[in-house]
Image (tube, rainbow, N blue to C red; front, side):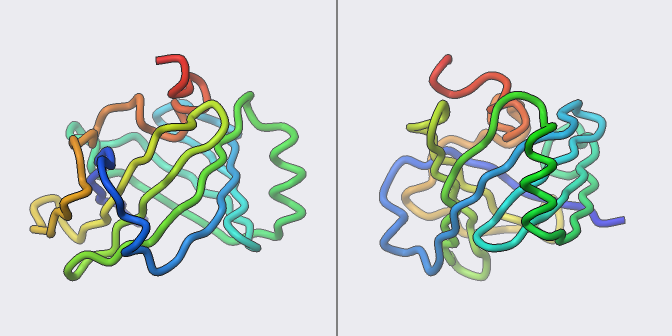
Length: 155
């Protein structure tokens, strides 16, 4: 069983000049209940199915399982997903010994940019670049599974 530990922040400045890679992502949810979200996504030219468990009290740690599947299978599964699709570009931005994943959202979530950093433990230290804004770890409004139900443009 894999445990995912990450911290999430809003983005308030230019990060793109520091990005080493960008990938377009389209994803939908077969199940978005907090106890077990089941996501399918097309990330660049690859497909994935991911299952995530409920987070701990801080929202920083939870079970995650992911498997690569053919893109054509993701396309079929997207047809039966819950309403709302997440469309975004993910930028990889190295900062110190970590790499931030910065998601710039489109469609109903246009205007929202969120950065995540994965950690080995909940108390691991990490560098915070100047473009990092308010921490939103544990704020369920910023979970992708919630953004498809209550998009940023409706806030």
